[in-house]
Image (cartoon, rainbow, N blue to C red; front, side, top):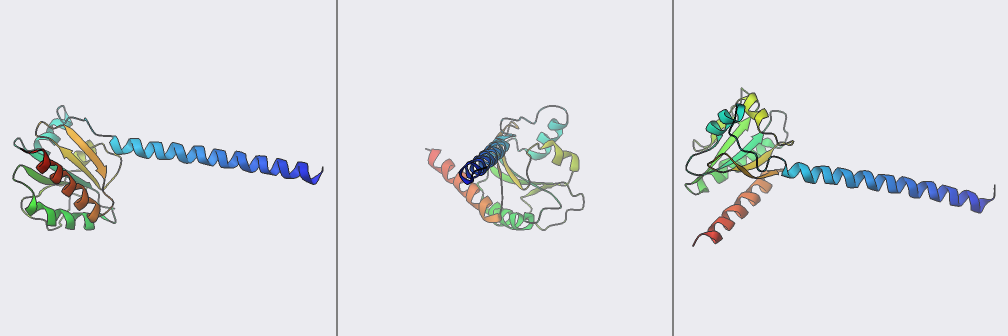
Length: 169
């Protein structure tokens, strides 16, 4: 075989491998993008969701639900941010922390509702933790996002409150 032919074959194989890798990465990015929006539009209204709705939502306002799990390495940072933000929220907003750890014992302000029920934790069907879900008084999830740090939580909550202030007359 001539060296030119061998080089062309090797390059063709490498281009094919790069194409396959790019297609795989694109597919994974799309899955992650779709996972970000999973849970939006879910309404906690039937069966186990009814129990979750009554425990999580407030009939007179918006609930910022933070879903954490016991094996999360960054959840402590997120909980520190929740403790910092809770006193600054408007009266019609509140935090609820949902943990899968029945022995959850972190210190949080009394305005933060802590739900330590693995079943309730599983009823929140976003595929990532820690997560922030914005739940209306009717139990409708209007926004969900992964929260990678306490700073990210602060940023999302402050942007949401700023939009709320702009929308008010």
